[in-house]
Length: 216
Image (cartoon, rainbow, N blue to C red; front, side):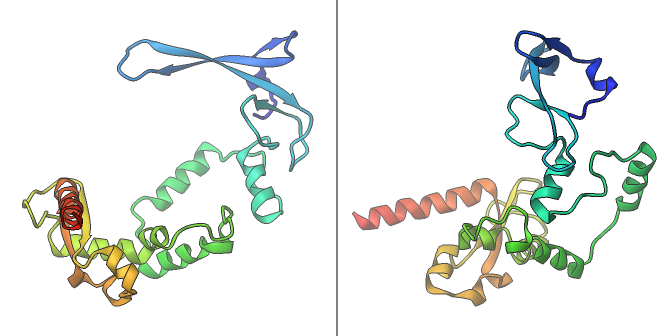
């Protein structure tokens, strides 16, 4: 939290603990009454990036006064143009109007996806993500899934239900494709069918039990 008169007016200083505190009211699930939580802040002499003093939440493990300073230090090593600043209401409304209804082309989406992969991503940890997660989180997998849904008119092909949570099911199982390296079938629309969440769950559950009975 940046130190300014507006913030200090909301806080109470405790001379014993040397910390600032405020009361935070929030809703609780299933209850009409509000839950009251005390938030404590400690004084930090300088931000790890902009070197300005700030109040840090007692659960904060970082050394930055704001998210912008943290990203600037971790990602590029260069100061952010918005470090310690906020967009005005007019600017925010302009950004909203400029992005409302905007449809990004497939080329733009692929370019953006590539720019956030591997070392280009600030959260890169040396390649610890499994091949399964990489494929299921890829743009190509999402495109394949959407093509399956559009072809089947967003209707479960088992129970014909519409409007439910859908899943794109691999006819030749994903595990076999990965095990036998059948890459051509991975994003083949002929190897996909639309199922609702319940039918998809029952299908895989039945296969598991069938495999166990054969093992016996």
